[in-house]
Length: 534
Ligand code: NAP
Image 1 (cartoon, rainbow, N blue to C red):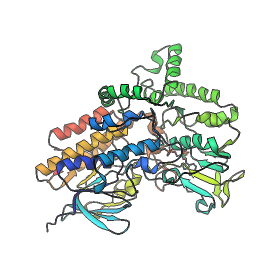
Image 2: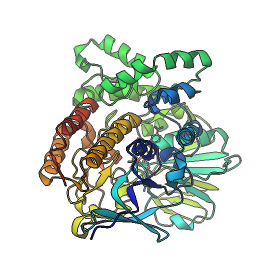
Image 3: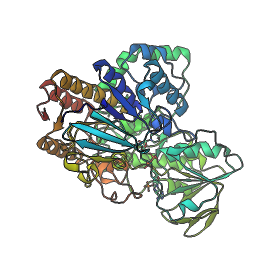
């Protein structure tokens, strides 16, 4: 029986990748519907409106590059824009391309089941409504499934409480309040810096310290914006050539190729430069040579000691179980100085664990704390979590969650055998890096594949099992020898708050972005012969 699905394409999510994919699909003349759980566009930048949320990468390098018109009409006001500015930008994109008319908001996808007989997907929303499509495109984001800690009593707290990725849309005041922040990743660090400015008291519950480095943000005036804009072609070209599409890329020298004096001078320069340079523009062996990693870690540890007055607190803030850069480096603006303020206290919960959340606050193994507000900056069920939260079933009802129980298996991070006509944007095993750059390539590749399918009357696209195995093995091999894969973090799939996610896996492609793109382009250039198209 041949029936026509409701839409050629359903896209899950109206973040950056969903928005751009919708825009590109229109060129193909395909019918598309985007289902978005939120009430507005923006994805990450819609949900993460916690205090202090901002880009950790240069604003202009993190915008869309596909339209000169768009580039010409948007001015950035800061080198590292705050969340409200970025959300305004994404709303501007949605308006400019009239994207909202194909987006259905307040529509969280509950399940997506593949139907072989019709070569289509049946998508069911949480409200029970349904729609079908030929191709299902997931634009669900790698960091969009927030996780609350599995601490007893979380629901019992009577004051205000919130996960950072579910922050209210209304302004929240900290004035006169006793505030707790649990979690010290990139989100916790940004939150702490902001809350400390006005809260009566701020208590930070830290389980594992992270290596943070100065962001050194500044405003962009009209003249500087004009200079930045004039440089756009060269800047985007550079992004396409660097290892992870960032403006920063590893220095080809190795740590011990240079004298001690030269090394220290290089690190001082990086520490005093804005953005990710110290993480991504450091010596090329920083994440592969243990001695090199220990040396840069010692350098940053000394910076922390210099900035935090109380030596005991300083030592607590220095990571001991992982080296610099082996987890995502949170970028900070006077984060360490916050601990010199009288209204701020650091509680090291690796020493005195949280026993429970009580109706009035937090009880640790050695103290009872009372709070007016608890902020959970406890992170995400990363990369595969947002897939796991949808009941995705492929051929013969096989569940994607079961298939990926021991880690994702994909071809190019975009397809999985057994799940025909499902295409993933910014999925597992993809080159993430500077995400908007990766999104543009990923969406363009998927768009070309769908154009090919349309032109050749193809209604079924599936990766072959052999190619999925080859790509998955390749991604795992790339991770070998990289110290980052020896450390627990969202980048290695570990989340202590999610059952079954305590074991490290390789969930990200860690080769270079140019190599990733070259492989994708090769597949396209020989008419996708690695895939079964019918
Ligand atoms: P995260 O890096 O996973 O940090 C979560 C924090 O919560 C960690 O400190 C973790 O401690 C703690 N935690 C989790 N469960 C806990 C529990 N049960 N008890 C006590 N502490 C607990 O998450 P994130 O900070 O939200 O950042 C995730 C990623 O989002 C970043 O790495 C970055 O890629 C992205 N991000 C980007 C920006 C930006 O570009 N501006 C800003 C924010 C986030 P452990 O370390 O001990 O697990």
